[in-house]
Image 1: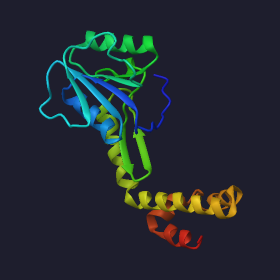
Image 2 (image 1 turned 135 degrees about the vertical axis):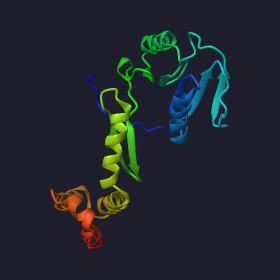
Image 3 (image 1 turned 60 degrees about the horizontal axis):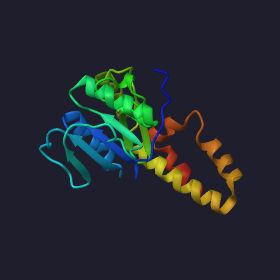
Image 4 (image 1 turned 90 degrees about the vertical axis):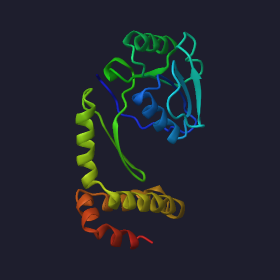
Length: 197
């Protein structure tokens, strides 16, 4: 797969999830938690269905994609998933095939998140491997990084507002150098950033 990683703003994104098994529920929950407008179509009602989803209990039908901007095919039937993917492709809508990520146009990554620091890992269709790599990354890039990124984001806004983009670039070039990670990890960066104010 010649994938290009993207971070998508989920708020208001119209997502159709077909299938309400373990994977379908997990994907629907991820998108709903991010603020997406989620419709779920499944032959069976899941054990729990958050009120933020629109739940439709029936088989998938041609035309169900409607105005969805992203489709997740997560049924237990490979032929149905393939039909969903074909329908999505025919309408120009991105599609994730939960059972075979490489066959769709979108792959869900294992994600590590600390505030505004977001790291996604994909491992060629091996979700267990991507989770292990994500967990290893999370051990190093912990809440210290989340706090520093949040501080830098706020400082960027205030420096640009008061002094302009060139001043932000000068300060960022000096701070975000090759030693940035070691300074975050040993705590020196907090003192440096306090001197910006």
